[in-house]
Length: 202
Image 1 (tube, one colour):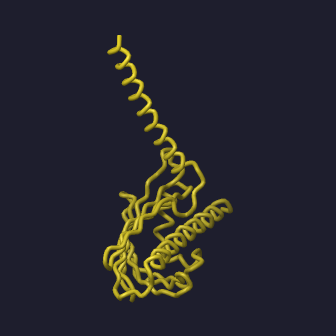
Image 2 (spheres, one colour):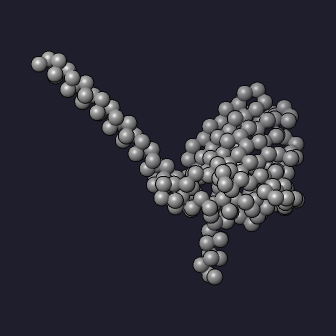
Image 3 (tube, one colour):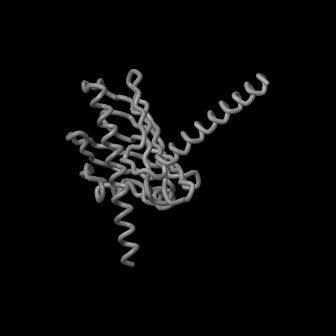
């Protein structure tokens, strides 16, 4: 009798454990795809010596194809980015674009020339610095559709390697990266709204 009771108790514990895991997964999925989110869904910023490891995620409430198409026009950043003073396409060859930007980051102007390489079949965009006085950036944006196909999870992973000895504290550097990502997501969302308005009028 005791063995049966212990067996039932063990089974009960296992069932509760798996129900708990499933509940956690459902809560996580709800936050990911259903709950309102800010521009940054999650972030990871870790610096070792002169190199910052970066990871940001954000959710865009639009289908993957629409989001990816908007992302292939970085030269339009000046139209939609509040902190973009200037953006110009310097080169376009195949699936590769080189774009010059002047951004205002934490109140300070910064000039970048960035190379974007687009891989539509892989839902992937790679980006790297061609020219910047302060840091070399390399990274990639991955696009993941929601189960119902109406939303997109955008994940950026990359590194920022200092080219000079930065006098700014680490918290300031992290804030600059955070602000840059937030601004790019806001610009992307504005671009999507503008495109939607054009489609509705046509």
